[in-house]
Image (tube, rainbow, N blue to C red; front, side, top):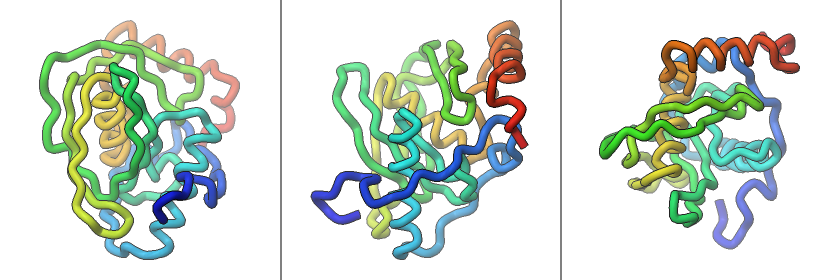
Length: 182
């Protein structure tokens, strides 16, 4: 990504994969080529995330099984965090566990109180191959954990138990988009 450009402004919006798509539950592969195709993927991911009104998006949510995610997410102090991570690894998730509202672009319109740690640290690379370490607290920590889960083949509903899980999955079965699921 060139400095000074708006992320996603040169990208194209791609179709979103929804709950039930096998690509959402398969672990993603490491990126090995830091090239123009990777930069274009990141641009498309920003464009898709913004079009869907999200704060984060993993590559497998648009059908690309690579370890990449983008984010434009506030923390609890309303500070904006904007960026992307290639081959991210969650290296720390700690602090208190907070049950807070969580949704997902792959389960549109469904939200549930989901437990997450209040602090998270993720290490990875930029599209140019530069090492980067991202630290988040509050809502941004939730976002970082959520996107790392996606790349490992997980969804936020996997963190739910009992009645919360049953309600979220029932809502997904009844959703307008449920019959479009693979």
